[in-house]
Image (cartoon, rainbow, N blue to C red; front, side, top):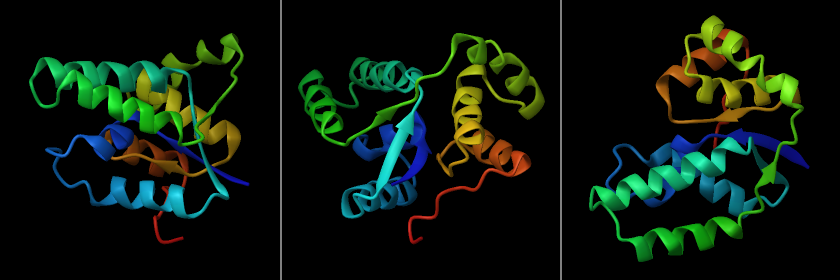
Length: 143
């Protein structure tokens, strides 16, 4: 099975309909459902970011808490694989962040993609630039 690292910015766009330019994220989601041979892999941080993004969307009245709950139920059925990372690897993230001009959180996704040698799917501009700089391919929904 082929893996792809996905980040929370991409995943939140699957459900937050008022997000601008959702085309790429929805195409990735469609591909994950159509091709069961592709497994999305995430750091455990992804779950925290997803929950926080939905909570903030509820607080800003973009969605209701019921809608957030329904989205999380859908996420449970996506077959997301959680990367088991050694804590010492997490301590390398500040260096990744500095080197690639990222937040420590975004560095977690880049580090995962590099370590597992998998493409990255993200809508975050800084993370996309960092992936290009690091030689990490970005997932193309049509591949």
